[in-house]
Image (tube, rainbow, N blue to C red; front, top):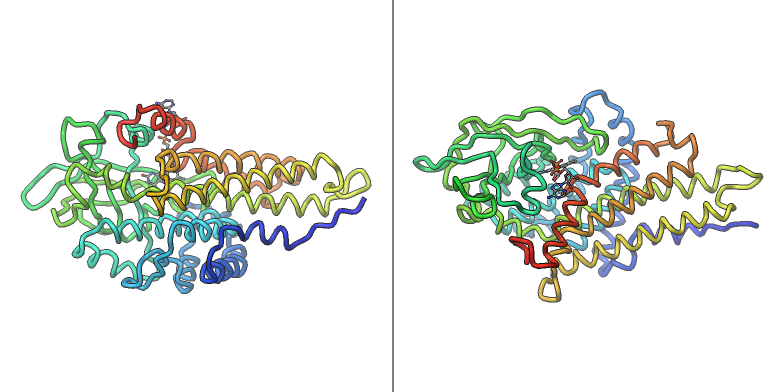
Length: 413
Ligand SMILES: Cc1cc2nc3c(=O)[nH]c(=O)nc-3n(C[C@H](O)[C@H](O)[C@H](O)COP(=O)(O)OP(=O)(O)OC[C@H]3O[C@@H](n4cnc5c(N)ncnc54)[C@H](O)[C@@H]3O)c2cc1C
């Protein structure tokens, strides 16, 4: 038996062809793919192997992504961007993650928050944050919500308060407390920070969002977390010790932080799903390549029925998770056509479960070679693991979706 693999099929498959609607999208994705091949892939393993989290950060790659226009592509023309919609952004994020998931996370957080900031900040805030952000080729953005005591609590949400508090004083608020696990936390120029301003109220009713600038007095970076994978992105603690933030930095209304999350973050979960998918594509490509070259039982693995069938199952999982992700992106951008809030929770859960399976199967297909670092499967497995928890633990997201479905969600009904 001779198996002929048609390269074009694989190419179209990873190129998400059926989701490309315009020539502009195609051109963007082709340049991203070239960027990933030329700039991201050659650096990924080397940076991942560095001995401290700080050194693993992909700052040079961010600068190069800026030259390509990716860093600001979700902003409008006013800020030099392309007004890229969720659908296009998800495809770009997936392509970046094929090269390295840390890079895709740094960029996805920044692209997502840039567009949210453009919508949510007032003119003065946008002038103070977005203008300098566009001018600095290395600037990235971050969002601080999670605290050591509050994680699934705010996803669901439970009627508890945040521990990071803001006390009203003349002209603004004084913030005390800490956030942790924050992507880009030690790297960002600007942050959206969610803190408890209303004492005695649950976080749903008592949280305010602030625009926070790097370097503000009383705000410092704590530990940079040493993670299992996704190493080219940094996560850090944000520490607040009597940090004064003026009233001019309140985003939206006092006590209405969760309304901002609801209004402006519908695609966030899909971008996380897109990052997972990129890892899945990288794993699939490795599994397929290994199955073609590794000979056991007198023929390449791919000529053994069980292995070949498993590749088809991997492809099915990726295709299905991608279709779900794009459905969510489309409806996030066209909410009048049937957006439902479960789509803000489930695509990442589906993609990460699919990709976790693909990661373990890819390792099995590689046999002992998969366990040896030099073959790169181990790194991808570590990268895939993060998505079971980040952007919400999957079980928590299922519970959130169930609460929405059965009218138990306090917020997204
Ligand atoms: C790589 C990475 C990047 C991140 N980036 C950011 C960021 O940029 N900004 C930010 O604010 N946060 C960020 N986070 C935080 C992330 O959103 C939280 O880690 C995540 O929500 C899980 O929180 P936790 O680890 O405290 O788990 P917990 O909430 O403590 O959950 C632990 C376990 O208990 C389960 N559980 C919790 N509540 C219930 C319940 N009611 N019923 C049944 N089971 C329950 C969960 O499903 C989970 O299995 C990041 C995390 C990671 C890992």
